[in-house]
Length: 272
Image (cartoon, rainbow, N blue to C red; front, side, top):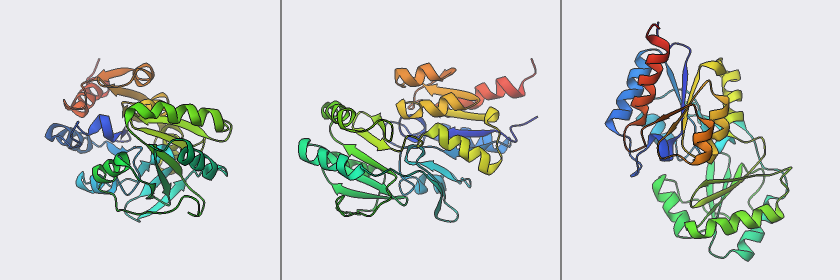
């Protein structure tokens, strides 16, 4: 018996990547072992497709990636979005309010698997550098719709101010509001989530949800953990992620993927 038909869906930042945003030798080896036993691997990240392609190729993966916190599924072989959930009208007004009332906040728009830096600050520069993104600039006032999401970037002490503003002015029936990291606050379509994207992914590629293994660490991973058959979180996770997971493995600096593979071997491959 092996892992044929099983899909491991892994978050990147705070989960698979270590604190320096590198891939450890042990994590790389764990994925190779998983794939050698027939399992498949899918990246599921808040990053854009542009910020994930290099990692995808470095790991030698073939399957499409879930990007933008579930706002898209991107086929790296064909270099195209095969699934996209875009923002409804009203995103410009939210960006305008943030620009006017929160001068310390940067504004980034995700569109067509690309990232456009519309109002830059130190946090947006770090984002561009960390993800090796091309420096695409645009004016959010004139950047054509549709958009996949708006990312507000700032120092951690200012993120709650963004949340408070968005919760006050955004219609929660048509926008999903999400704090995805201490420095990031996002506006998405309510149907854009890693959990919903995982359902779409399995339907399109023929995987059973009951045989999906999800690994995450943050609020943006909760829907994915609640959807997967085998939900794991890392020791450095947030309380919402811990509540949504069934298993807790080592933190992102201590080869969590190796723990996941070992536990799955015990659950599936070793006779009771």
